[in-house]
Image 1 (cartoon, one colour):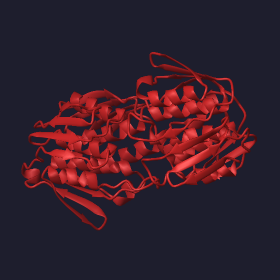
Image 2 (tube, helix red, strand yellow; image 1 turned 180 degrees about the vertical axis):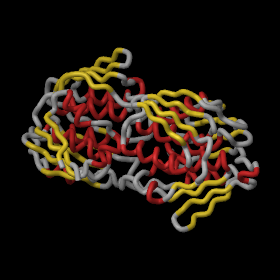
Image 3 (cartoon, helix red, strand yellow; image 1 turned 90 degrees about the vertical axis):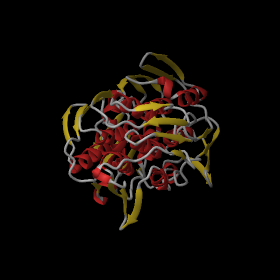
Image 4 (cartoon, helix red, strand yellow; image 1 turned 45 degrees about the horizontal axis):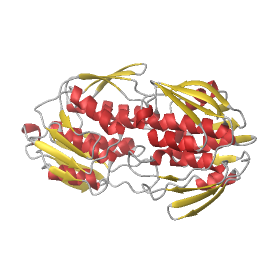
Length: 422
């Protein structure tokens, strides 16, 4: 099993290029199932989750040609309408094949998903939405089996008005994809507003879909007979961007992100400025300078455009060495403080009660051996290691490789003393 060895104390300086967004790439890869034509994608990140999704699609019959960060996907000859457990258990985003398969082929069999153990993320919103669109759904032997009456003989999902009880990013994406080929108009209310949802909508529109309102809480989709091929560039990863900026704020330094988008991470940038960082934006470049110990900042997670749950752990790491005390409130996932006990091993002073963590900043963390528990917790522990004195060993870093492209080489470019060990 691979680990990261980090010698803390080095300031971060230089430029780093931001990769394509994992959370945009995964649904857009699934969108290839909606057409028999080729979907050409650019800026696809090299991540374990992307590799898993590619394997899943290939297992169904999608032909994929890769050239660096470019992929060409052709779903002209799909011969298996199933996402098996062994593929789905490592990545919850596999549920995103359900809507496209049901819409185009009238049938889908998808294993109930696995993924990070950060809390309950029910799939009932996906199921209820497809049922409202006319699909018959049975859950048997751990699989969701969806059938559209008429199926391959020409049956189509039908437009419906769907109200989400809870804001669900993957639920919004799944039903938006399904609705593109439905008969009539589908309206999604209380829809997710995340930029990744908008990026998927842009790709679908390029494929011939009729979608209005993406980025708002009401999305209207008018179904069409068929979609065609398209070219689409995956948006920059706002969570990777935020992670590098928080790392520089915690360790100190002067870094510039290239290929980034400041407009989709305003909440994170405001919090970094509150912590004492100087931030300048020019086009796709974001510069952060931090020449002092950060100030503690309170954080409360909520659906976009509020503060993202995927940045909560990173800010907690910065708060452990900040001046003052801060409160972090997690409102999205009930089990997303598993990094707290690992941060305590480095000397962090954190008290947790329910969904609230109170962090009292200390002048110095001490290196230790710690274990990653989920994807964003891994990034949090790397940031803490960069700011700590001495060597920190981060174990179980396969979580990191699911969502960060070559994180140790990118940090090394910025002057961090970090290396992968076996």
